Image 1 (cartoon, one colour):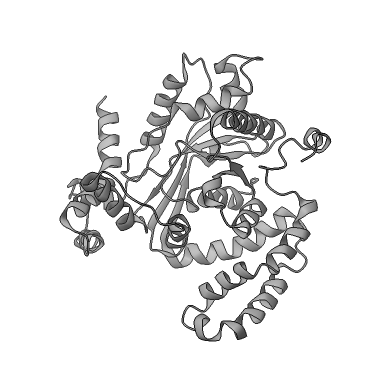
Image 2: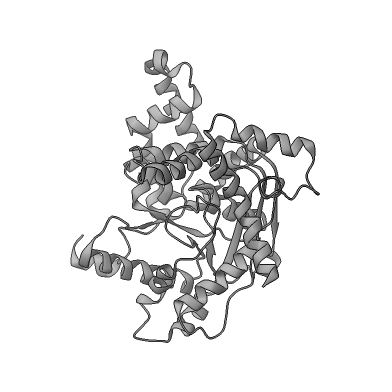
Length: 373
């Protein structure tokens, strides 16, 4: 990027695509052979190997018809919404929401959320905002998930912006400052942001905010205002997302068990992409999105604020039958719900089974501890 273009568009390398870029990016996707192969395998899992040569041109034509006339990010998201609706109908029993009435449709918010599913956490937040007639949020996504150019294109068409996790040393500080500046810029131009409360999913079910995330929010503002002033300006709202069943629970339990037993776990090259697909297609049961109260006030430190966000996320977390079964609270659980949870443990070795039980029990335990305190 030239110095001149950097001045004109300082966030070009990380920001979501703009309406003026949509047609070019969609055209690039339609002629990306790897993307067409992936879609063909997804749509025709049994026939793709033998008849891929015949199916791929048909898939490309079908996609071209699907995106014909799409000239804006909103237009693209409206196409995505049709698939989101089908996914919700197929893989969830019920999707509910609370606290959205506290949000002003004319305000921009920094939604800081617990993190259970790579793609669906922000997707469900955006879905309930969309259904409420509010603007969808821009989504923070790690560059570790964007190794394929077509994945990056798809995510940036869907309002994602890139968090440069692979940067090191001085480059990392530059990247964090740019990210901090971009988040502040977005909120102040009226665009909401979704970001996870920590890097990576809370695989053990313990939702904890990393103060380093909050320090990053402040980086680009520290010369102009205090930490409390910066947070107030960002309009921060804690969000709690809870799934009755996590489609990736067995994979998470095996990973945590391997780390506990062997001291390490070697992640496969495209394991995160596999988790995204499993999360989208797998059974989730009841899902709830809870928006907390916008956070204002004086904060001594990022650690103080992190503790407040944790309390909000835990307090607003909706418990499901799976949490009650795992924690041994049997009074409100049916035999059918108990058996459904037991079936999820099948095929796991005893150590991984115990880890999965704890994974589902921890949100209830944390909630009871908060109520007691």
